[in-house]
Every structure is written in C-alpha cells, then in structure tokens.
Length: 428
Image (cartoon, rainbow, N blue to C red; front, side):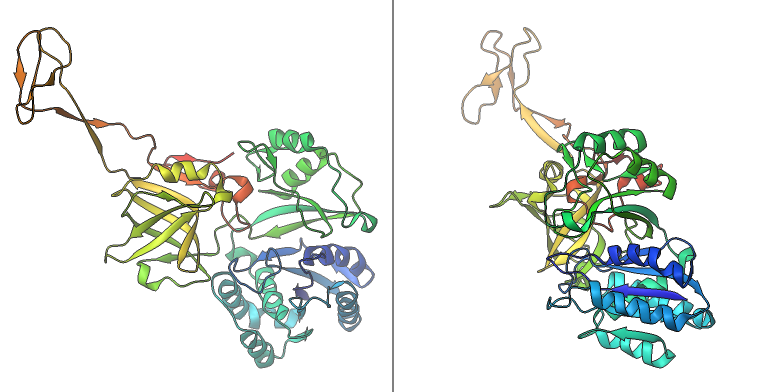
C-alpha cells in the first residue's frame, strides 16, 4: 500500500519528513518498504503552511495492512505537534488493488495542490467517493497533502524529480545550536557541484542547507541522484546523526509555475511564468527592495519585486530599463510578483551624446553659445550639434536567478536548465 502523511509539524519544531524517516525504520516489522519515499512540496504561497509546505509518501509491501495502519496512526498521534493551532495532520492509505483506479485522479489532485489553492472539502470528497482509507486529525487539513503525496508515488513517470538526503539530530540536541563544521559543506559543494546544489552560497559566503528552526533536521543535501547526495553528505563533518533518509522530491522542478498569457488572469497565492515589457525604471524602496512595473500586450501592469533577501540578484534587476523585454518566474502575493528567476529577452538600446572632436586638431569642440552649435576655439571649425552614440548596457540577454540563500524549494536552479539557445547565468 501507499501511505501519505502531511501536517505533523509546527513553527516550534517537528518535521513531517522526520516522521517519514522514523517510519522507514519501524515499518520493517510489518513488511518491506519498497522504493524511495517521496517528499512533495505543495503550493508555496498557502498561508496555512507551517514552514516548507511538504507532504510525504511511503510504499509498503505488507501482509498485515490493518496492523501497519494502526501503528502509523499511533506514531502520528505521538509525534505530531497537536497543541499547535496550525497543525492538522492527515494520513491516507491506498491499497494496491486501488492503484489503477486512483492513478489519474490523484495525479490531477497532485498538480492542483502544487499550483492552486485547495479546500479541505475537495480532499474529503475524493476520499468519500473512492472509499479511501484515511484519518484526519483536528480539522484534517493534512489530508490535502497526504492525498497529493500519494499521487506522486502513483505517478513518478509523470514528474520531473530530484533527490534530497536529510540528516536528523539526536533528540537531546533539539533546540540547541547545530554543531557543524561549515568548511566541510563548502568542500562537499566543490566535490559534487553541479550534480548537487544549494548546499552553500559562494557569493554570499553562506551555508544554506542547514535549517534555523527547532525541528529535527540537521542538514539537507539536494541533487540529481541518490548516489551524489549520499556522497556529499559523507563529506559533511558535524554533530552525530541519529538517522537519515533519502527522498525523491519535486524540489528544484518549477512544478509550481503556471503559464500566464496576460496579467488579467493572474491571482494572488499562485505562481507564474509571465512575459512582458518593463514600463518604468526599477526603484529601490525602504528596506532595500527593488520594484518595477511590468506591462503586457494589453497595457495591463503588475508590480514586480526583487526583495532584499535576494541580495546580489537585485543588482541585475536595477540595470533594467523601460522598454526591456523579460520573462519573469515567481509567486504573486498582495498583487506583487516576487521574482524567482528572470530571462532577459531584449534590451532596449541606450544612447548618449558627446561633443565631437575637431577633425583638424582632434580636441573636443565646445559650445559656441545657445543655439549656435559647437566649435573648435583653435581651428574655428564648427558643427551644428553633438554626436549621438549607443552605449553598451551593463547587463546581457540571458537567464538569471536569485542566489541559493533566497531560492524557494520548488524553484528550478539554472544549472538544471537544458538550453542551448539562451545564455544562462547560474547563481553561486
């Protein structure tokens, strides 16, 4: 059977992936855990999320599904942060005989959960219609992610996916500063990049794969295959690790992005890929955020922002000019598009003027007076006006991204882009 679980964590601790790692070990008394577990990131703009909006799915081959289900539910009750108002766990169990009947239904549900805003009732209606074994705790919002994660496990061939190695702390260490040797993360990056990414941020000299919350995760290494993330994790030097798990995941895939043909169709709490023309020079506002308006073909405009946490990416955005053509990727909140990636398609020419040189002596001519053109004082040669010339812009056409320290879980790093016709500028 396939087991989907979501919403067991809180802002104060716990992590649904940790529960998955525990079950990977403990469920062996009930059968064999087949294939790698799935870690699915859902719509990143949902306000109900605790931290990363992740759900998990496991696949268990067992002769005693009832006992396994009872055990899983007991572990959720023990480990989930039920006291937190935002923690509303859900668990879903798909038996093998139900796979074919639910494959398409849950694949569609998975897509909706990543790109759209779903009400709990939609998940409950599917569970009721197909007679799916499930359990919702409190208001049961976790049933949404649990169903979506089952959809991923049922349809891996329909997905682009990556991998993450997650190392977990010993319980007595929870809430204390993580003891790690930061240089070992830079060493792991040197040994495994570009097959791994977002371990460190070289430009900003930061380790970015270590969480700062009170949850059990010590660090997470993301990459293209299980072997490379395991190799990178083996280079890390840190406090002792209690357990680890390697997950398949939709992280780094851009699955959250919807194509937008115009600004009128854009809605808050959704993420888009949108093409348009810069209609005014970017403006740096209080807090260091950089804002500019983007206009579509109909004349509609939307504010687009490179917020302060995007650090050096803002310098690229500041170089845009009115008339530049760009494709932006990002999420919309309060009517503003938060830029994750930017493809510059066309740069409007920029011209400057200067006094021409005297063709006789080579010195720059000076103004001869208002409305009298320019002249060389030495040679008495005149010309009616200044000369106009094109100035090379200090930015190039191509693909740009925010640095690793600002990257969202679902955003695809440029090192994963398979393009030959467009120049790519990965952020390191």
